[in-house]
Length: 283
Image 1 (tube, rainbow, N blue to C red):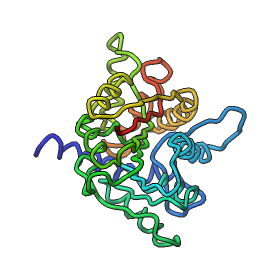
Image 2 (cartoon, one colour; image 1 turned 90 degrees about the vertical axis):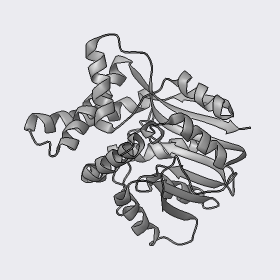
Image 3 (cartoon, rainbow, N blue to C red; image 1 turned 180 degrees about the vertical axis):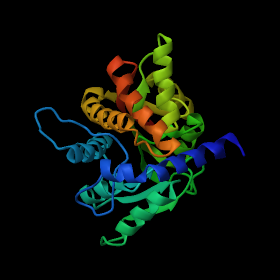
Image 4 (cartoon, one colour; image 1 turned 60 degrees about the vertical axis):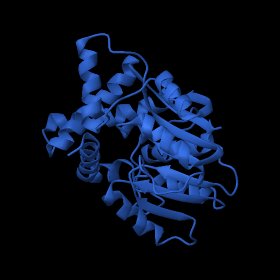
């Protein structure tokens, strides 16, 4: 089995085994059966509940993307469709396609899609490195904590560039490496994060910028939101630590995932990683 195929199968298995946890963590209280697979976003001056913060991250990413009327949008690594349905609700003038490799998440997305009116939303089971779309198909391609799962981030940038229309935009939200580990403990924490959440690599922002420029993107910008995310990551850590203490960790996949959850907050608190929105434009 190739390394690429093995990585995809590991990610599929991870999201299958962790589905119940994500359904609880990211439950969309406005949309039955839909759940998000990302952190929460705290807004200064607002007291949001946990589930409101999780939804707020999708809203903030949509706001950052500045999607123009009548755009065709791809959500790459769409999960169960939380961002897709939020965008469809906010911008009914758009056409949105979500692609994902995790079958179980697409079942949830399709079940909900059949309940809503109109035909502006579609879902497809695809590997985002090899998309079945013609050149120049989309105005915007979104990644919400999905780009980081790629085992070939250069190839992914090239594929996104191919399917974007001229002057189209790539937009992502993700964790980035702020600096290299300075001791063995930090090395171990970073390894726990990558192994537990199946992250082949965590880039620094300057590394992503280089990859995107090589693919042809320009006007690349980053917006840091570590402080908006860190409270949510702390809650995730506390919950994971409680499960670890209780000894109720389930499968080996879930054990590693809980170690990664603890490690994620650790890396934020140490300044080892940061959380950013990023965008770039096709020339």
